Length: 497
Image (cartoon, rainbow, N blue to C red; front, side, top):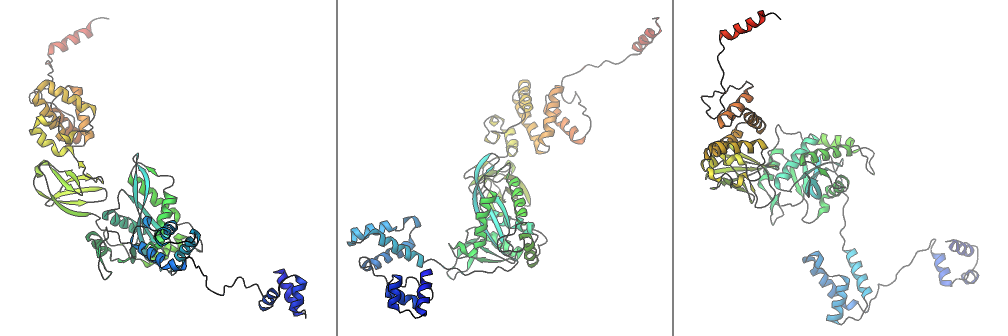
C-alpha cells in the first residue's frame, strides 16, 4: 500500500507512466492499474473458470448427487467415491482434487439461507432431548422436555423415563405452573406423539390426547417442516444448552422427582443471566412474556392415556405390552386403564381397583401380592410357588410367625398365616409388623390374636386377650386372693423387730 501511494503521488506531480515504471521497478501495466484505482482492487477474473478434464463429467456428478437426496446420509457419494466411479465407469483421466473442489463449491452454493426472525412476547417452542442420568443407582437414558419462551429466553426443563404422549402433556402442565401462565401459541416438530398423520394439504391430524390438551388450554399449535429443526431454532439450541450445562457431569439423583426439582431450580437461577446483545436479564424480559400469555385455567388437564382391557384368568390386565395385576375378585371382567407418566390406574365401573408404578420395559409383569392373597388362602398349596409372592420382602417377624403357626397347626397354620398377610388390605405394614412382634413376644401365635393387637394399635386402646375365645394362646393361672393372706401380713407387722 505504501508503494501504491508513492506511485500515484509521483504520477500526479507530472511523472510519466514509463518513467514511474522505471523508477519504482514495476511494469507499466501495474502503474496503469495504480492510477486507475485508488486502492488495490484485488484479483478480478475476466472469464469463467475452465476445467477441460472435468466439464464433460459435471452432468454425471450432478445426477449422482441429486439422487443422493433420497438415500440415507451415511450412504451418499463422497468425493473419493465419485472419483473412483468416474475413473472406472466413464474413463475419467483428471485428478481427485478438482472433483473434491467442485463438490465442495457445489455444496456451498446449495446451502440453505435463513431469514432472521422476531419473537413477540407470549409465544413458545417445545421439544424433547436425551441424556444419560443415574436415577436410584441405575444408569439410564433420560428424555427431557424443554419449553422455551424465545422473547425472553426463559426456559423450563423436566426429565422423564420415556418421551411418550403423557410425558409431552405432563411437561407442558408443569411448565405452565412454573411460569404461572399459558403461551398463546407453541411451535412443535412433527413427533408421532403429537401428530398422528400429515395430510396431503399439509395440515396435521393430531393425536387424541394432544388434541384434548390443546382444547383444554386453548393453545394455537404450529409446526415446523419435517426434518427442519431450524424452524424452531430457539428451543433446539436450548436442548443443547440444557444437556451441556445441566447434565454434565452425569446427574445422579435418588428419584425422578428429586432430579426434576433440581432442574426447576437451575431454570430459576438462569433467569438472572443477561445474554449477549440484551440489556435486560432473562427474568426482566420474562415479565413481558408472562403479561402477554393467557391465565391458567381453573384446573389442570389430566395428563393420562386412556384405554380399555379385560382381566385375564390370572388377574392380569395388559397395557402397552406390560401386564399389571388386579384383585382376583375382578377376574374376566372389562376394565378401563389410565396410563400416567409414573403410574397406571385400573378401574371397573366407577371404582379404581388397582394402582401400579408404571413400567417402561417391554413384556414385563407387575404384581401386587395383596391382589392374590384371597385366592392363595383358598388354594393354600400354591403359597410357596405363587409368582406374585416371589421377591416380596417382609420383615423377619413374619417368617418366624409362619414357622410357629405351621408347627402348631400344620396346614391350617399356613392358611392362618395368609389371613395375617391379608390384614395389610386394611392396615399399614408398619402397624401389622408391630402387632406381629407383640404377638410373638406374648406367645399369642394365632390370626385372631394378631388381628386383635393390630386393631388395638389402630384404635389406641390396650389389648384384652380372652383365653376362652383364643384357644391357641398360652394359659396363665391366677389364684383368688383370700382374707387369710392379708391377716398373715398384719401378723408380721405386729411382730417385734
